[in-house]
Image 1 (cartoon, rainbow, N blue to C red):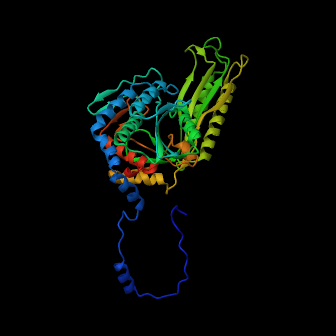
Image 2 (spheres, rainbow, N blue to C red):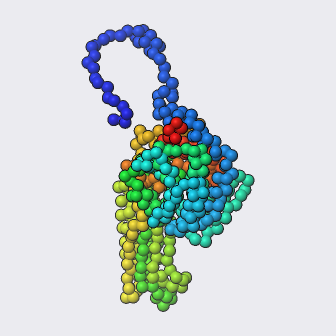
Image 3 (cartoon, rainbow, N blue to C red):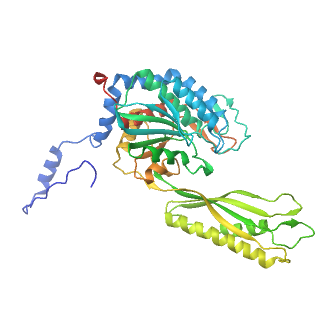
Length: 443
């Protein structure tokens, strides 16, 4: 039964004959409900928030300060944040949040946490944007400007989300707003690559008993809201052997040969269209020189599916294919006297699935914000920081923070702040809709 609805008592009805003409008269006489009245939660969230002077002041803060928000995005993007090396960027976010007047801490995992204290400190809402990028150390992250467009690795994912966190902290403080539930503005670590969502895992573990909702800001746009967590696993397959010289040891088992054999088998694995299931060999490593038989070779594989059983099937397939590749290479080797090949497949990370309830107050708050800003957004499934709370039954969504971006995870990544203000208003209204606002007379 949907929350907030009381079941109607069944009444025994007497059999009655009603003439068609009378039915028409009755239907024409019935009052017609408007589309808004069919969705009372929209008005219940949007109208009171929009009527609050402090809320209006916070929303009005964005327009004259958009240039400042853009500048902070550039500054943060130009601080490298490779996986497991988010510290310098985190320190910069801490300084910004401190300047905004929030008490700030960095937890043992590396998450930067700014507290916007509410009237109810026993209930929390987390607003999170991840610090890390997919790019390795040494990547040129200098931002290039072409008209209104900014280009740099990580500029959209997730420079956009981080800049929004700073904007919200400034806007609510400038407006003198106070939430009902305490809000934690968080720049978290470990969202990308092999980080395995370690930052969000630590947050949920620390605050689980108080946590009522999580709003994740990831990338640009306002056209979607992630309410379904896409399950995924990241695996590493390694094959090792004795190694040797390309001439004198020709014919001995070669780990790279075995890995290629196994990989070709794996990429021919059939996956279903429904439930949608994907795989990707994202990294290949091995060998020391062109004239050496390598002693080790490895691949890293990402598998994703809307169904956990398909994930398990794909993982099993990878193991079987690598084993078969090793067997084929050993069978074809001319000289097995110098050693044999060993193999293993290890789990680097696992992201659990989950789904937000259709009648969630958080989704209602998002829809109310969409209506107020004149925005339309679709529900989608994706793999984000929201996976962790959703898998544990905690209300969570992931949304873009406005503007437009493209080329994510590539050196050609770009961001255009046109329309950013709508995204910021939409996100802030969603946050306020789920946290609640202390009314002016109570302040």
